[in-house]
Length: 609
Image (cartoon, rainbow, N blue to C red; front, top):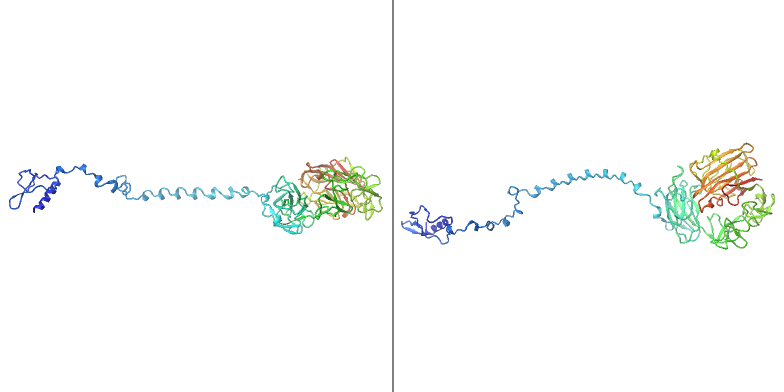
């Protein structure tokens, strides 16, 4: 070994903490302490090797505390426990990643802990058919929420607007019951008149099936309650479409919208009829005619100009200026022309019972030398039975209620008042008449009622009669139609007695009915036909109880009124002023018509002459 290698070894030993004085086994062991080591130089001579200057002896070696672990191996930087090498509970490195130790799918499996199909099954918790029935949660829509614009939807031809529709998809439930009968499946129409007139409103048209029982009414507002009625009709009661509707409204103003309702009578009165289906609605703005012109009393084809009204003059009808003789009274004073007065019927007349004046309704109809004309209901110069007469009743009148037949006066009946007649209740002592069908409106008896003797009526023996719900009875073997209203004379009707011929309805039995009874013994028997507690159609709170009495002795006929009542403002519906009261022979060739009104606990007697 050369000197340089030896010096390196000694330096290493010094770093390792070996003292130079320690026995090494290389020297004599003399324990020198001068920093040199005696070595054999190989030639036997001792060799002095000083300790290297860069070799640090043990005493110079820094303590362990001077060598910080944080400097040589900084744990916080080189081996971050939190991020690079996560430590487990035992201090070892965790090999499993977080996704394996806490697998979301295992610890909180949505499909297992909250299975929608098991915990909240829609078919069990919210069954639509049971929890939300459409009939309860979705009520019928008010037709007035969206009335049909009839002016835009209809087809105008001349003065008539036509509209074809169908109410099948409308709701049966309605708030309009009682407005005009029993309307269901209601459609509402808004109509703005082009002129100030009256409206002829009808479903009696080719587009309406005969089986559709329509109900039509008109109002000033589109509401179920509180509106003013402009008119209504349930059945026209004649022709091939007897269950269709037709009426003439009260006066309307140009540009002022009115509302027309088309419905079906619901529920239907029988299996023959329906309350829904197609229909053809027509609205005619009735032409206005000036004063002095011929006019239509029904108002269907013409209406008098403002300030005049349609009145019977002779055999026809003429528009008379308000305030004139025989015309309507004016609304303000003077209500009538000079020398005239306004009577209880709102007609301007000369003094009652005088020539040209209205016939009196009580006592003697006319002054001496005058007779009451059956056509004009005015007092005219009297003509004796068998003498020539004026059929129009303008220049003269047959005496004692004789009829001017073919220009000759022929006597038939005399009318007198019964101020306090005795009313016999046939519904208590007699038989209730079965009606033709289930309806109690616009119908008649199911079968003819037998008269116990041959009753002479206008000289013709009668043994059967047919009572109608509309306040009349017709003689003969042939059943009558039941027109809502009629007039005397009527060429389409048979021999009849009209006690209160109008649009009447019977209430539910047994509180309301038609009854018959025979009292007395021959030759003084009496046949009684009673109408018990009927009401005037559209005036549901009215009450009419009355009876026709046929006398075997003398062929006398009594009309007795037991109860005629109506709510305030509707008295004219039960006093006879809107009804037809009287008698006629077959086809109206001879007739007698009551002139005036009737009242409770009073009556009329017709005595044949």
